[in-house]
Image (cartoon, rainbow, N blue to C red; front, side):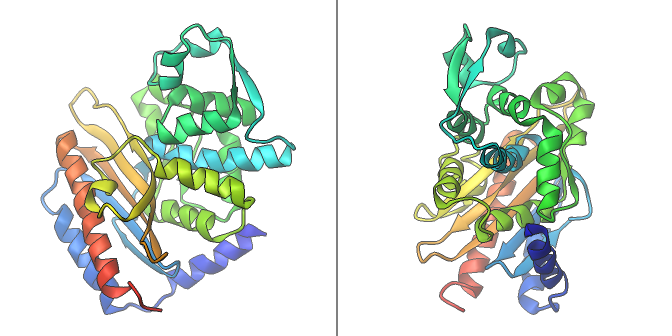
Amino acid sequence: MKKTYWMSLFLVLLFLPPIGKAEDLGTQLRKAIEGKAATVGVAVIFNGSELVTVNDMYRYPMMSTFKFHQALSVVDYINRKEKTLATEILVKQSDLKTEMYSPMRDANRKGNFYITIGDLLKYSLIDSDNYACDILFEHIGGPKTTDKYVRGLGIEDFSITQTEREMHESTDNVWLNWTKPSAAVLLLETFLQNPMFDKSQKLFLERAMADANTGKDKLKAGLPNDVLLGHKTGSSDRNEYGIKVADNDMGFVVLPNGQYYTIAVFVMNSQESDKTNARLIANISKIVYNYFVTHYKDKD
């Protein structure tokens, strides 16, 4: 049902005639990443109809951006299983053994507590909590459930096979959860435009993304204060050579008048500092916002 809709949209995007505006934005974005010791991929969809990409041919490690994909599959799962966001899950002490980033675990060191699926999703989306993410995976049937669900929406050019724990076990494993930037924005568009869930569930996910505590120096830093950003970040450690495998941010930007666009920026194999990566993503965000306001705001 949804797959047919998005295959149609993708074909429309794919075969849009080349126009000066898109070429102009692409030129600006390519200039922004010139001279950077990193591979940078960008994808933007304006008003659900015009796709602009830079370096979209590569597979970028997703890191925690896949928690957005997972959140969609979790809501689909609870709807199919006749559960709700208020359904409680028991978190055992044995579930909290691996040392990973987790505000939830830090607040409940002894384990053996009940938590709702909704609160797990908040921890995962807002705080990028790794334990919350893996507990959700365990509940719905693992990464394969998320991968299958997203493919069922007609999205391709991505793969999700690893849990957070598995990615922490080996640097090589982070490459197994990958996406092209265009696939990321197509999924965001699917979420925003297609009636996948009821209104309360959609609003729940939108608010969680808007409340994200991570990446305030990335996409958000390139936007005016009165502009709404709902997003999910993802970031790796550095490998033995000091290279940052991935530094990412993807989300939707909503202007006060209700117009919006979706954007994904993936930075791969960066020899730049974390601050430089963040400034680069913020600068790309600013370029895209200014371009949108100039060419699209208050226009049909």
